[in-house]
Length: 108
Image 1: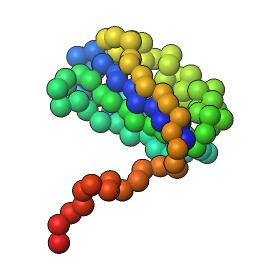
Image 2: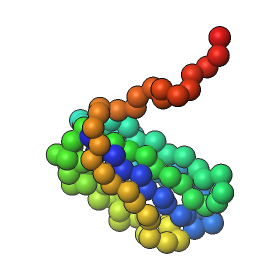
Image 3: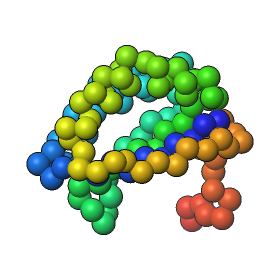
């Protein structure tokens, strides 16, 4: 599985509407064959930073994502909305998705 984490720092005037702005990109990516997950979170330390966690079944699915029209469209408009170059971690990991954490579970 290809696992990717990206930190997007958004210009302050766009940070409140970022999730709405990426809605089409998000739904289109989630609908891709080979997409495992595509999840946005907002930083608790920086209100203008969003973290995207995404995974694809394999390198081929990841390559198809980067070649998709919705990816190209997002890359075309995002430079006007971000305040710095995104930071990324992109690794291949064993597995097919999220697993249960062995060290913690709810009581009772």
